[in-house]
Length: 395
Image 1 (cartoon, helix red, strand yellow):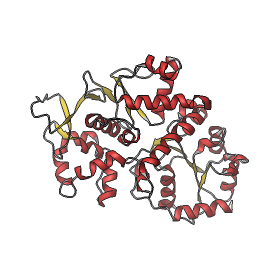
Image 2 (tube, rainbow, N blue to C red):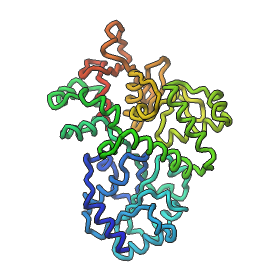
Image 3 (cartoon, one colour):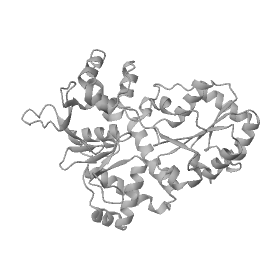
């Protein structure tokens, strides 16, 4: 146990989260079992350590961070370890990469039932379906998603500002006033392309080649997260990777399931399952018409975030596609985004129609009062025309 405390103290002391994540204030920390899901590379480990640093500090032995990558846990289950920790006065156990432990959900259930004074906060992959696939956790785990940096978080980090998030309603009702608060402090468009290219994943801050790092992360998402968690045989890995590549180079449009099945030599049903796994891994987003959802064929498959579009050669980067990807990625966490009847139009929460448009080439277009125009290549807005970058302030 001492070795774990000493590792914990070192990691907490040397954790320096560059920007405080909004999720830290959204979680009800009074819950006894908290699950934090997120795609690989978005900063889940740092998030746990930042919590320990804020609430306890490095030397408070009531809190302990452990990582299931440690080979020690090949011989000892979570529940047994938690019992030892609780017996020594432990109150909060932070478990990173919980899915690496066999029978992890049953182990967490034992902890919940046997140690009523112990709080557990664990991280897992976005591929995990916490409640659907682990019925023993139903009703006891509160689950949250940690996503990559929003444009607002990126801007705060790059400029030293402390801009607060806004709800979609606040932006729609009050965007002209909000922009007047922001523009004297910063010019968002000076930073927007950098965010689009490399600002979603916090590891852009590391002193390593970002594209290489992102490609490595994308490979780990397929090789570890999808295969391990979905229990897929290794021999199918190349099919999943090829499918992802084909979807990426096709660009955001309706996938031809028959062609894809032919290309990767599998059935249409398997292609649909693989597409779902790629969406769960946060590599793609599936967009449906209003009222439809999986297992129907999506009307559009897009990359999950814009950084991924630049990582896959030879995608021909199209500004409109990039901006629509940014729009969907900014909204998907808290809102339902559907395809509207025409291209470049989206329906949000079933009743707000958006069109993504280029402010520099729309002077001949008529504006419909029933549509919100999210415009790129501009910093300002008026009435139902809002600057697209401002939607990056939603979280």
